[in-house]
Image 1 (tube, rainbow, N blue to C red):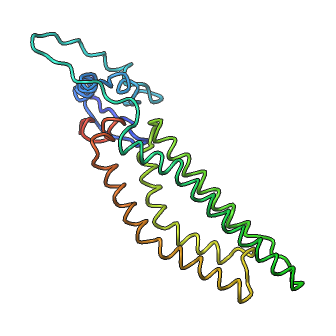
Image 2 (image 1 turned 30 degrees about the vertical axis):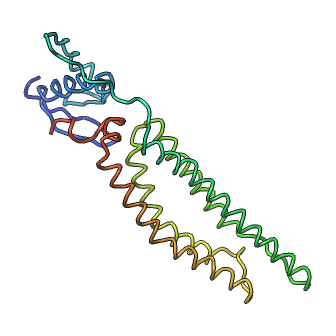
Length: 238
């Protein structure tokens, strides 16, 4: 047993190999920090096992320590709070709401154009359905990321980081979707509107990039984030 190599799954990634003594230290440290039960649920595998099993089935629970003057650390926060909670609300609520409001504006403009077309007996515009489906998909993904982050789901931090990267390229993808959607206008007046939409999207790249960098660094370095989620660095033996 002492010579075996052990592998763990943390944040959906395989880590290792570790020795048995390192696993004992990992569980002991996790118990001292208040998340021993979560650590014992971490999946582990070694040669001879047919599948991944919880770490608690291999490593025994640490013996309670007693001694004068010993002070137990405060329990880790079990709910998101502070700036982390604000980020959850920003992504999970603010993102979808802003997208829906943007869709409302676009369809309202399409309705005004159809009224203008009707007055001059021109064909009606069907509407930007490809653009709408794309935006609703982004809104649903934004809501899921915010919810998973608030509920401390597995890999929520990594998913949030990926979402922040998505927000940087989102304006460019949106412009591309507008360019291929047959529901967007094609005559001169409507081309002017499309150009304004694209200019507005282009102007949003810089602030979105700045916000994405700030929040990305927050997720990497915030003590609250590391305490709220099972950290993937620092508490796992290397």
